[in-house]
Amino acid sequence: MRLFAAVLPPAHPLGQLAERMGRLRELPDADRLRWTGPDDWHFTLAFYGEVPEEALPELQERLGRAAHRCAAYELRIAGGGRFGDRVVWAGADGDRPAMRRLADAAEAAGRRAGLPMGEHRPYTPHLTLARKRTGRLDLVPYAAALAGFSGSAWTVTELALMRSHPPAPGVPGSRPRYEPLARWRLEG
Ligand code: 3AM
Image (tube, rainbow, N blue to C red; front, side, top):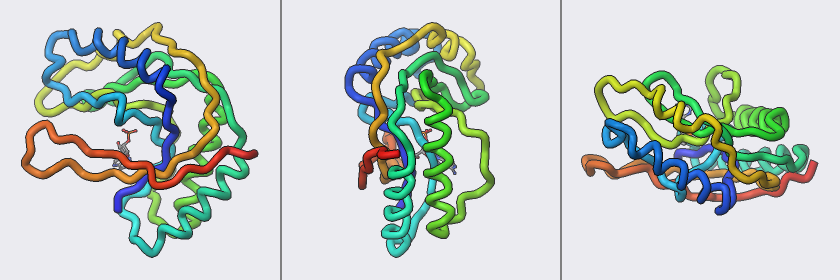
């Protein structure tokens, strides 16, 4: 099963972001992007890829330990950016060093559980809002429309293990569905 670790923002900041996203969806060519919605929104901490069933108990055990070591922290959804011409995302402000420590701990949990984690990349906290479908599209105006956005702060108190169900093959507009499998309180 396809798994990743994430931070799930609460309803209020998600609603604020949804309101701002209205502006982005009015930009020219917005229909050439595949948009995500508040039900999907999360900050990925670490991506585990396809995890065999038998590796799940150890991954959960390791994630539980990671959450035990990491402290709760303040976060807000703020600003935004793009990954090249592929992805438009909203960013995070607040205790970013604590977010990075949590992401590092989630990545280390995967590695210690024996999962092939790939190379370690610098962590960019982001919440994916849209992905390009096809062709060339300048995403700068979308990122610019998020400049100055700052949602309400909240305290991140949990780490979630998420399952990603792939989109239905051959169904236009079909999106992956995300399901929380387990959550742990941050207790460090
Ligand atoms: O929602 P975001 O974009 O933060 O991009 C994928 C998504 O994160 C990411 O994992 C999350 C759940 O699917 N993802 C998918 N394939 C990936 C890969 N090969 C990946 N991240 C890193 N490497």
